[in-house]
Amino acid sequence: MTSLLDILKEADLRIGFTNHFKNIGVRSNLERDILQRRLLLCLYGLGSNTGLKRICASIDNE
Image 1: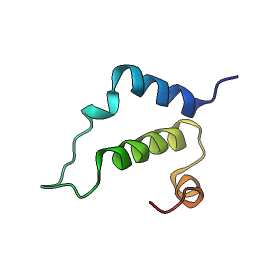
Image 2: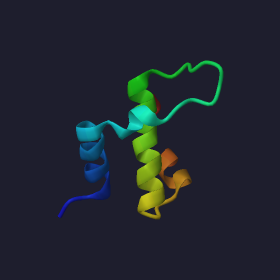
Image 3: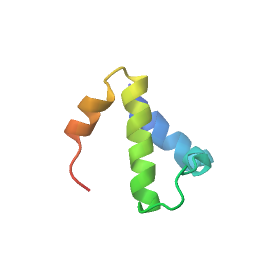
């Protein structure tokens, strides 16, 4: 059985869809790999109906 997070990571590895997300601010202080990880976790939280608060509470500080 494959998890949703594995599918999102594999899809991003193959087609790079997180590269198409743009920052709406003037500048970004986040490195690309941290931003990519946060985007994938965000999509996972919404797609699995886990919720963003629960996902944020379970990840380590970056």
